[in-house]
Image (cartoon, rainbow, N blue to C red; front, side):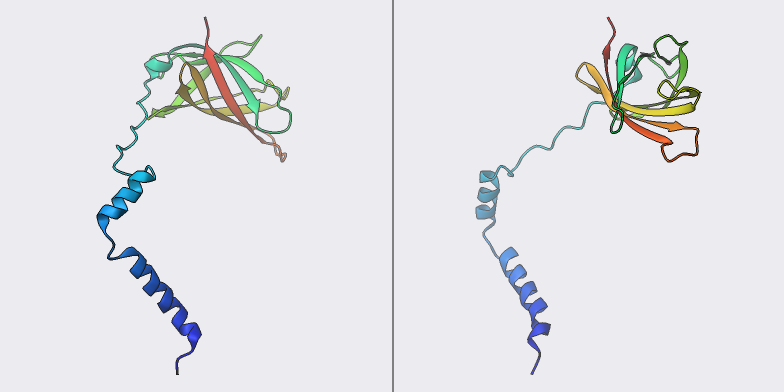
Length: 164
């Protein structure tokens, strides 16, 4: 006589097949429509972001995700192509900003190494990913400090508005 523990998986599989098969497809469609899952058009893909869309001067803020959440402010100057981008912190000379990649709805930039605004005397390289969100730029940035300490990486949220 077979042990019941061996029959449990077989019974579950049979119940699943019975539940999924043989039903009236019109009833299933009506149920799906009632639940808001019926024949809906797929969501449109986000519009492709061109560098020309981002071109201009942006007043930006970078706020660490944890720890000292004092914002760092800067001006991002973007051009319609990947050359001539700069990042300017208050009371500092503009820093060359490389467009590392752009496509879909995002632009990836990198700045540095340069002396950190947050950590005097420490060199840092910052990589940001930004997207257009209405009339704002939003995204994230990761600062990598040239130090051997445990705090060599800082993650931030960035956002900005077009400068007048």
